[in-house]
Length: 517
Ligand code: KIV
Ligand code: ZN
Image (tube, rainbow, N blue to C red):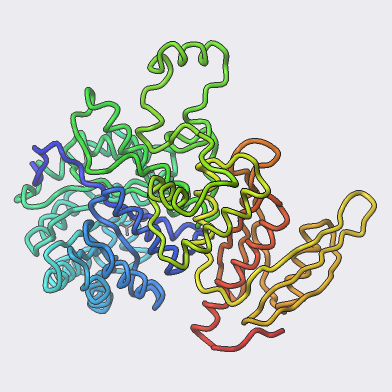
């Protein structure tokens, strides 16, 4: 049996910041990665894979900052099998309380021949060399045979045996292309644990992609077969169709302890907050019927269901909304609520803001309370997340006045503050959003291409806040901007400005040029 496979604890290895960030359009900046890492730590995940340090200076910096901040979870950096990759990952995770390196190389005939163009024996030597080298830097080393589920079993066993002998403390088995099915994946884990000598010296782990919608089922089959770590991501984001969804794995284990007698260290009450933060930052909306975190996951529409739930919630609810941190939407505050009550509410919602961020959030809360009669927890979460993503902006939104309707032309009168200087203009466009974005372009001179414009309502009702995501691309760089406001056009302007600020930070890193306008 693998190490710990007789224990009932399943370790949660979160890779939202690495595999999740590899989803097209999900690029995050360092402040956003830190905000997610802090939430993952609050949630009690065992390992945070914070990035792929050799892939860019930005990734290196983010992993290093997270390693400095996070004290409870292990912080892991990904590395290919080359020595420079491993040394860069080692340097990035060095400040961590529990540093970890995750190194991998492909072992399937297809990947070895066409991608790596290496003979199996060369791959084998790389396994030994990479794990041995990684162990010079950290006590915890994960080794992954990429495309493990399409690898030859004899060769896979040899490589796993070599990795354990070289000091790997965890063997992570990826279903890289999401091709496996539950019984087959479980059998693969079982076969490795039974056949590989010294398999009890390592923990076996799963890393399942969701191309056939089987990532969670495959991961759980892996657990039943002896795996005691699951690699997964918040909201299931990840390459292509994504990865196994953390919230589904954790809640399935919690809810069905009778059928799956395992537990995790995750504080499930943080799940909703984590899901919302990841969705706000990436701009990837969660589908309404998504298990655990979808807007409808705990909603009961039909009369028969509502009646049953009112008589006894367990008639139609297999887990409570509170167990995933979904409080009944209550009216929490209003115009007359003061700083003290607002700070208490933030603490209740799991936020700890510094003084400046708190003052900004409180000012925005008061503005919102002037516009919106009932303020729900979701409104406050949207408002604070909006502050988190704003950072040290060079461009700030000041005011917007729009004329729109069927007679046209739609006109936007916009004022921004750019590097401390007020600028104003009036622009027209094909509709009010286009007019607003044209005005921003006129004031900032940017040429970025709009790739996504998305609006969602934070709560119900016509006075709900709109939450807008804007994705901009420039010179091969992609950023997401977010904005929330009761006025959809103001939210749109805020989101566009937020994205521009992120592009400016990225641009400054390569060429510190001023704004072109
Ligand atoms: O899907 C995959 O194979 C990976 C590896 C790097 C573990 O993400
Ligand atoms: Zn992956």
